[in-house]
Image 1: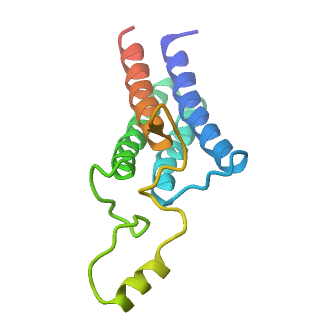
Image 2: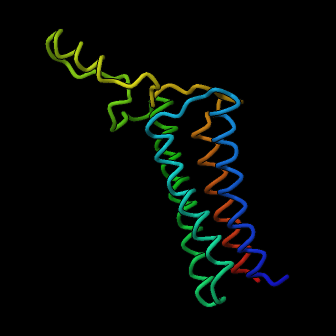
Length: 155
């Protein structure tokens, strides 16, 4: 198997495995995703499609698709870093799914509470060794994406 064929397979496998974990935690583990969790999924979906398409086109185009898929995996990792930071309260979230409230009248606060989704972006539903699912996505996506790229380009 050529280095490109291995990179193509690895680039398809990484986001597919991460999405299997995310969907498994949702449908088997009953950990429902917040808005920022969905943000992390979209680049993985994109990476899966791009890596799959790389199997169907000439190698010249396939290499570009694999590179774009790796960029998408890294983007998901970057979103995971941001989301983990929101969960650990290192910085505020930018969506209405964060529990932080703007000051105002009681009516404004009640309206904001009622408009806030039940799944909070700034509360980790599950952790292992203090690392949330967003944190694991960040670590695996960034290290995995960079690892595949460096291994592929180092050949």
